Length: 169
Length: 215
Image 1 (cartoon, chains in turn green, yellow):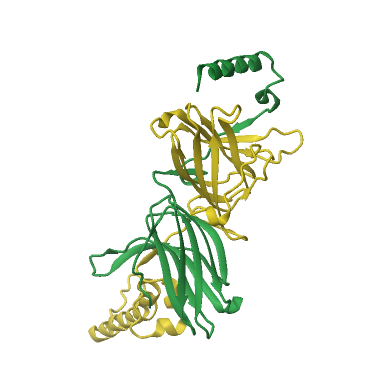
Image 2: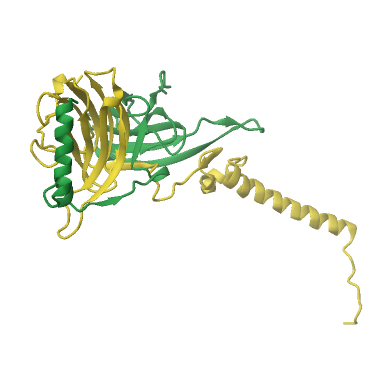
């Protein structure tokens, strides 16, 4: 900022302060509210730029199913849209949007973890967002109940990591 | 009946029978009902037959529920997400164009992710100031518009997400305090609408890059 423009700016600010009613601030009576914090925070900030991915997920016919999951830390946000290309009929495609922690072994030789279902639905598209409630693996179980193989086009943007080599059953 | 009469204890064999019978019944209850319903163990198949094995949910998984008001959860929309790339030039030599506001329209609960960075004077990150905030629009007659501050800082890069706390316009006041022309490269993804050029929130008339120039 040059000295001249700084002086002009200060002069303008003083003039506006001196003449209430002429400034923008004086015209609008703002009701300023505090932003919610913690789990209900409206805004969240991240140290690096958000990523964007488009993934085509093939799903076999006749109850063929597959999971597509991403890694998120608690509080990470993703926005998504997916749709089944060449729609098989709304009632012939089922999905479960869910998340789980990475299972940890138990003394009994099994494993344990936390699972949360976000939405179970029948339909060939979904648009939404998730702010991860816990660190773990979050995503979709997709099941094609039609007799033709289909492709699900998933678009993602946000703060997450993709998982390479996801098991294709 | 005489007071003080003591009932005759069962014979040893009857006692053994009763105890054994009780044990048998208890075992049957555990095997048929408790194991399948509580522990995912269904040795007889009775749990699957009757459906009581469903009571326990998926195996060794603790199914968690969120408080209804929590922001850490999923939200759904009726329209697909949109992506925009917006470039905003702030030139100190162009009078009145070294600062401006750029906002987008959002419904309550609408979500977007954003990232922006400033090029042109990377040596002076503290010479770029921004104020990320939201204003309620439209304002009902006779009421004050609500404003909420999300982040005020100096920096030449910022990334985050926003879940709109109310219907209105949400975005950035951007101020170039350097003496060099700079460009803000803003990317947005999510559930929002752009404000047409010239309208409140986009008085500077900023247009998004055409889709073929967005990468």
